[in-house]
Length: 351
Image (cartoon, rainbow, N blue to C red; front, side, top):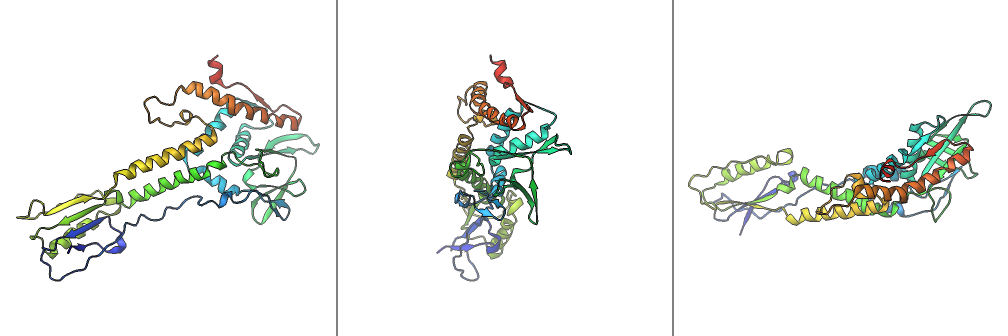
């Protein structure tokens, strides 16, 4: 019968210390077991409640959005690929825009970013006493609500609402309602969260030192109870930040195989982690329709992703040009050309 000597269970230590029954102990001990506690990964947004409803319910003076804009905005930090894909769209679009002094570049950037992330962007014209436009501002779309009578409210503070005037609502189309827009990447949210969960799990795995876990097997009769206790104390010190410390054991007249270290790490875990990360990344990029070479993804194959310049040209034609055309509706609303669009510099060089 094998005897198991371990550190205190609450330390969740990554070593199992097994001692052979031939070692003479003062008293017989029962086998004890404990589990590796990697901790619970805390996701920024979990489960599938986000996609559980797509209708706009009335809430007092305005309609509630079909999805939580608060949760959608938090998704931005859940995945590097998701954030990078949105940034490259925004940067390429803004690089082709010439703005009128009436609308600052910072305002335009905020407006475009809100639209790409939330599927809604808002512009408000501030007028002087004579009804002439002074400037255009971009209220944060996260806090703007569409009123039941066609007006708009800004509700950044729960106890205070501000009614907005002269508002232009720029939205992405939705098949279920026409009050709010929805971002086009909602179908990839589960893949995005899976990518985040895999990263959180692997981070917990490393922080707890489980990747360095081993079974320490001893069958040397020269080890007494105090020797085993001393080894146990030294191994307990390797938890957490010190999990890569070396342990020196001196056993005079010990057997060659009296003390063995058997690794517990599963090599397949690394491969599975990479598969999850790569597959979920591909789903996110497919939803954004962004070529991987435009956001710094390193190819895993020898052939690579192909010509980055050609990919950028196709991306500009298929994604940015339609967005430019749609943004011209701002000029029509203001009855003034405040935005002018040019060609992508990369496409001009390629002609």
